[in-house]
Amino acid sequence: MKSLLKSELVRRNVTYADLAEKLAAIGVKENEPNIRNKISRGKFTAVFLLQCMDAIGASSLRLSDD
Image 1 (cartoon, rainbow, N blue to C red):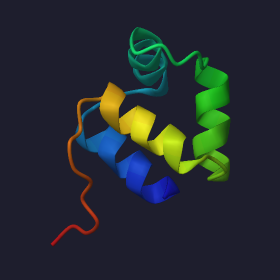
Image 2: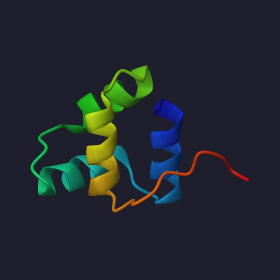
Image 3: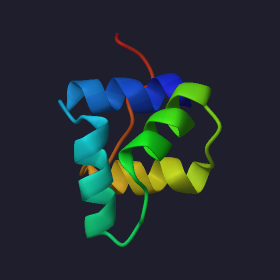
Image 4: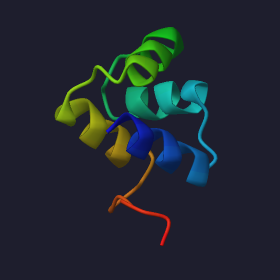
């Protein structure tokens, strides 16, 4: 899950600071360091993944580069 989320952020040119702002806009209170740590450790829930996808406007997730 970690690599999928990171790749989607890169594809959409969204930084961790941008993600924190976008999450705040949908009512999810996370700060940039917490987001960075969660994603780098890969220790986050499916709910957090879906919240991030919603916040960045992703309606689908690419599973491969093919």
